[in-house]
Length: 149
Image 1: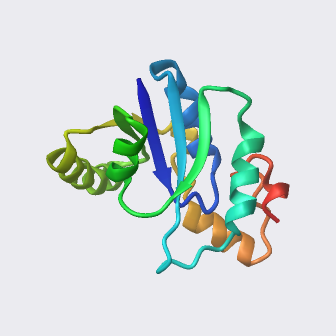
Image 2: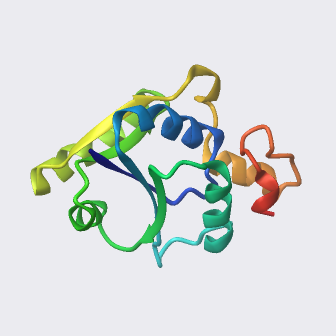
């Protein structure tokens, strides 16, 4: 079975990393799919985000790619069985549930949810960016953060 783990991953945090490490036992392949959204201004450059994620995984079952458009279209193209999502809290669940239901209605592709480890549940890419923008250290929240900066 194959899963697509989509996101902007700006940056890819220790929470994202933990979800992939836990999910790999359920899937033959996990595609970490970095979405390119022309209307969204990303903080970290795309090529640095790719190199950063590559530095975290040495497993042939994990593939890193970029995409534009709908995640479900990418899933069809890759013949993926599931969309993989991590949930930090109830707000994440409510948001992700609606997207998962719409994706299923459009394509029949289910979403596989994993709860984030409690010690990582406060990590949020937006907050990590703010810490970095204001001169703070992000290595507690992002493994190999030196690759991004």
